[in-house]
Amino acid sequence: MKTSPLISAIIVLFFISFFSCVNSKKEKQGENTTSEETETENQTRNDSIKRCATMDVLEKHLAKNSNLQAEMNAIEKHCRAFVAMKENGKTTIMDTIMIPTIIHVIYSNEAENISDAQIRSQIEVLNQDFTKTNADIDQVPEEFVALSADTKIHFDLDSIIRVSSTRTAWGTDDQMKFSSSGGSDVIDASQYLNIWVCNIGSGILGYAQFPGDSADTDGVVVSPQFFGTEGVVSAPFDQGRTTTHEVGHWLNLRHIWGDGNCSLDDFVDDTPISDGPNYGCPTYPTLRCNTNDITMNYMDYTDDACMYMFTEGQKNRMRAVFADDGPRESFVKKMNP
Ligand SMILES: [Zn+2]
Image (tube, rainbow, N blue to C red; front, top):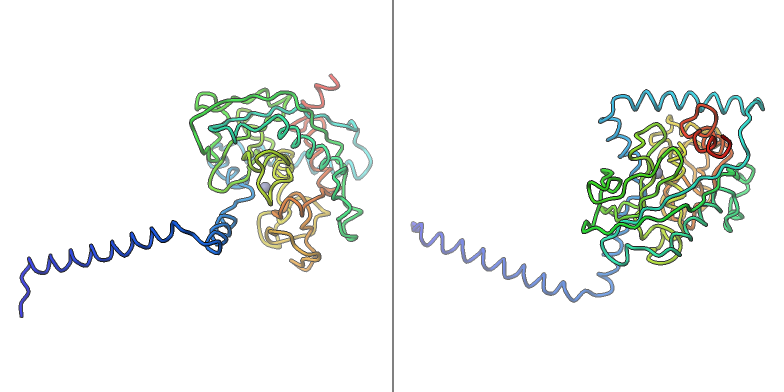
């Protein structure tokens, strides 16, 4: 029997309306989530967390700025010369380095307008982590104890700038660093570490800019729920280690796996070679590339409670940026004009 076009259309419409009813019923049922479903949702949320967007941002900046690669190569060369001189006992760099720090809080609601106490808790963590006075330093396994370093780099809270905005997520395009786009302008990057605390979005905890890049965007960005140890912080990234990690990048540190396979290095001799990030809280030892990973290093991707050391090699690399002709020597010159 031949079906007329009209009857065919009615049959199609019937099926469309039937299935849309089934779907809307499913959605309604979904409103009453069980605890099991909430757990699954939390898992999904954790899976969408991105610990650090620094290398993605670097890639974007390298594509935009044709001079950046050459500038970074020159800094690398300077750094290697500094480390070689240090090994020969020939460098003269001041002992304690003080970094005046400016916090830009950009908020679209009261929770994002974090308290002074939350900000101070982050400065305290920075000072502990960079001077090896963090309470969890005693958890470093025997294999790495001799490597753990007091960098003698200190952070001094200079000022807090608060900017209200209607924007709820800032992404990684540095818009938070310009008042013209509703953010807060950098304050003299040659004298201050600028940290922007704003909701980055897309599950990103933070990102930093390496030495050698533009002064207009120089500094670190961290989402408010991962900044400091009190207030609106969110576990397992509630111990201030996101900022420690990002300031590590700001001082020219790479991720401990060198962002590549076993043949790529982080340009630090005493961190074992690895081929990828570690997550959560790994049990020592974690074997990769035939050596035990230093998963408890601030430059890995583990949870805040499971990272608690820089190495001597990383210390030398960070201090090289403050040496004569280093990219951040102005911080030291200000103290000793
Ligand atoms: Zn990173």
